[in-house]
Amino acid sequence: MNTLVLRSAIVAALGGLLFGFDTAVISGTNKALVAEYNLSDFWLGFTVATALIGTICGAATVGPPVDRYGRKLVLFVIGILYFVSAVGSGLATDWYTFMFMRFIGGVGVGAASVVAPIYTAEVAPPANRGRLVGLVQFNIVLGILLAYVSNFIIAQIFTNDVAWRWMFGVEAVPAAVFFFLLFTVPESPRWLCSVGRWDQGRDVLQRLTTSHEEAEFELKEIRQALEADQAAKAAKFFTPEHRKIILLAFTIAAFNQLSGINAVLYYAPTIFESAGASQDSAFLQSAAIGLVNLIATMAALVVIDRFGRRKLMLVGSLGYLVSLGGLAAVFFLYQGHFSGFSSLLVLIGLVVFIAAHAFGQGAVIWVFISEIFPNRIRGRGQSLGSLTHWVFAAVVSWTFPALAGALGGGMTFLLFALCMVGQLFWVLKVMPETKGIPLEEMERKLGLTTLK
Image 1 (spheres, rainbow, N blue to C red):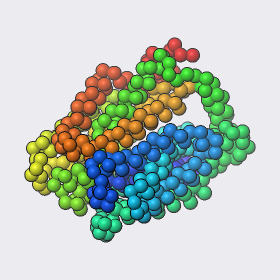
Image 2: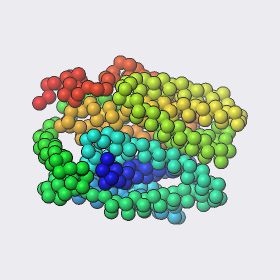
Image 3: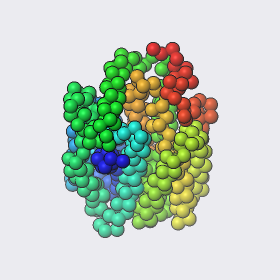
Image 4: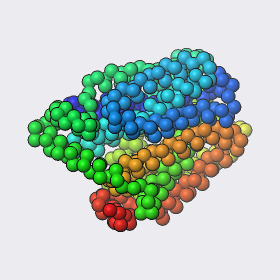
């Protein structure tokens, strides 16, 4: 593989790593934030959700600037947002400043969730595109693990009143590294060609490919793709013919968050402490959750094209029901007299839960959404799925502390389990299999053959 291609993909994937780190790092600071800013359960949830609101804004608005100013320039801006958010969150002297800093970090996360995969796909040759784009998803999960490990280490070094500031501030280091590494990679050749800079696009392709012939072939593909994009702009999105696939995308994205995954990622140490674990043990157990998340994601990426999307979703749905049902039972049984044993049971339940998510929904959602939409509306379909995902993520993260406080952990996990009963029914009765089906045949399979 061309070394420039590999370096460019790794740099873009570092943006994904920061994405994962930024979203999970707050999990270790919840208790300190409540004490620092005197937050109720409701306002703690809102504080955690602030970054997710920024994520929604970033994902929803990044399209025009990334098309007008280029992928690389927007990645530079994302690096700056990460850096400013990390330093600002760590140094914030009041709640409003802290909220603003987390919001702009969320804008960076939302933008990165769109731009990093696009940039990687556009600099990678077709033979390596799938693996290199998958590197972004792998690094998101790796970033979550690193956030948990970083929180644990910092908690051992600093006292509680300042440790939370370092947990946020340490992200400034990889953010700065990401920013400066961007100077070593090229702009996307597809974007250069899309704005009429064909000579520059050809020059970049010469550097990204191994021969003149390969560069010219890629240039021809770009030209054809741009022509197809122009035709796609005329296609309407919200039509009766598209109703089925729009509902499929909306439903899988909604179920993804109704499992409670972001509640677990953002509140893992709090959950462990509420079940009887010490603070140090809670941070260490959270790191174990992050490691399982990484391993299960890797396993799913290996087998997804062999087993198919529905089988992974089926395994994940059953794992959700076992784990969420078990967690609800533990909280019902031990409420008021938690111990080290109950903490162990919660750890086992959350390990099964995170493995079920990573192997099922976590691996399938974006692949499935990208496959069910025809090329002419695929970009808008991806945007719909992403927007649905982040809106539900914000709602679940916001309401979780208040729900757990009012109803107790047992009832809260039971509600998530009931939602996953709905997902299991949807997988068995509604979800189509998309493994190995050409996109043209996919249109016929899903009843889209009336589209022009």
